[in-house]
Length: 182
Image 1 (cartoon, helix red, strand yellow):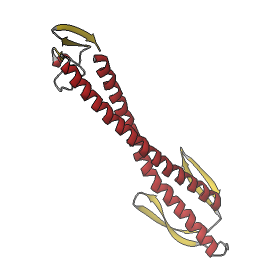
Image 2 (cartoon, helix red, strand yellow):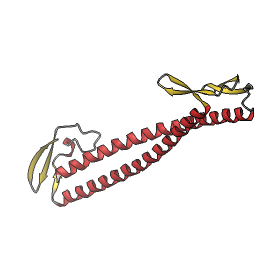
Image 3 (cartoon, rainbow, N blue to C red):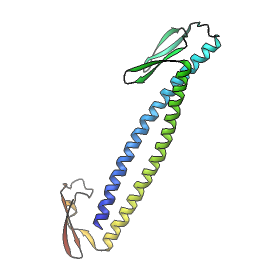
C-alpha cells in the first residue's frame, strides 16, 4: 500500500511539472502570435500599397516602431522586398509574396501549436485530478487497514511547514512498527 502511495505521489509531482511547463510554453506562444499577426498585416499593407500604386514605386509616409511605445515617421519607397527578423540576430530579405507566405505559415503553425498545447494541458490537469483522487482513496484504504504514521513530523512526504525532511518514515501497522527508506 505504501509503495502505491509513493508511486502516486511521484506521478503527481511529474504531472504538476508537466503542467507548469505547458503553461509557460503556452504563455510564450500566446505572446508571439500578436507579433506574427502584426508583421503579416504590415506585409499585406505593403502589398496593397504596391498594387494600389500600380507598382510604380511611389514613396509613402508611415510610422514604424523603434521600441515599445516609441514610433518614428519614415518615408518608404516600395521596393517589392521586405526584411523579416527571424531571431538569434538573423534578418533575411524576402519578396512581399515570400514574406507573406512565410508569415502565414508561421501564424498557422503557432495557432495549431496553441490548440495542441491546450488539449495537452487539459489532459495533464485531468490526470492530476485523477492521481489526487487515487491518492485520497489509497490513503483512506490505508487507514481502514490500520496503517498509520508513527511520527508524522518525521515523514518527509507529509506536507508540514515545520517538518524537517528525513530519509525514512516510520509506520505502524496493526501494532507492528516498520521503517521504510525514502
